[in-house]
Amino acid sequence: MEYGAHLPLIDFEGARRTLADLRAYARRATDLRYRYLCANDHLLFGRPWLDGPTALAATIEASAKMTLATTVCLPVVRGPVQTAKMLAAIDILSGGRLVAGVGPGSSPRDYAAIGVPFEERWPRFDEAIRALRSLLDDNAESFAGRFYSTEGLSLEPAPSSPSGPPIWIGSWGSPAGLRRVARLGDGWLASGYNTTPSGFKESLRRLHEERAAAGARRGALPNGLVTMWLYVTESRRDAERMLGDVLAPMLNRPTEALRDLALPIGAAEQCAQRISAYEEAGAERIFVWPLADELHQLERFQADVVPLVSAT
Image 1 (cartoon, rainbow, N blue to C red):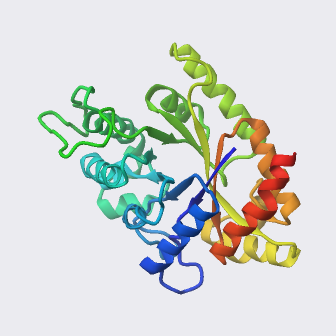
Image 2: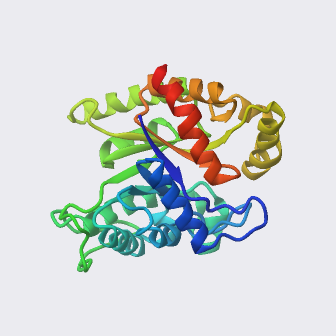
């Protein structure tokens, strides 16, 4: 199991993030041997949200040798050409350390802000992936579709690798989403607050079937579990406060529904059991996102949870 850390882009406590905050977080994650540094993407959200790709670019130097990942960026909302340009820049400036995670986005507000019907997100997303591939991969042909075209376009400067950064596709596990990952993706990103270990295992099984049907080698597609909200505490009251006062209103979900998920919120042993369940289900990478006291939570997860996962 490999672990990544989401950049703390959401303002939970009313204090603005500074560049120094983000760089300190990236350096601490590096020191604690997290393998990935991640950034999510929204234009509008229920809480103040620092722009993800900009924040990720700002921490390139502080992230040292960690792999950088967009988990996920939104090529339909931002536009595939603009997104390709941004991904290429981060890839070049980081020395080829980028994993380009992409998704359609789940917020109608983001689509309303750019004047694109939310109902068009899926066909647009399919085309946007192909457009990204044609712009980032030297060997890919140009793409022309209903919504987007890259004919006559050349992305310069090109990414570090001739094939461009790997494109991992976000899917919560629907049959259509997994088919998209199997057809178009270099990897799969699942959502920690939209699945369970049993659900992940079943989705992974279906993904293997889709890959086999497409003639791909079984098990060759890497996966990761993103937005694993994290708060390690031996206090049941504090864990309930994180679920009920922080996470539930932000996600607009009942606290009871969040309790049914296998999020690492609670005692270290309980968190380790939940991470272990995902590891047994086939998860290869988990990207944690502290809900408060971020540096201390990164430390507690590595010191108190990961050894128990390894022992299990």
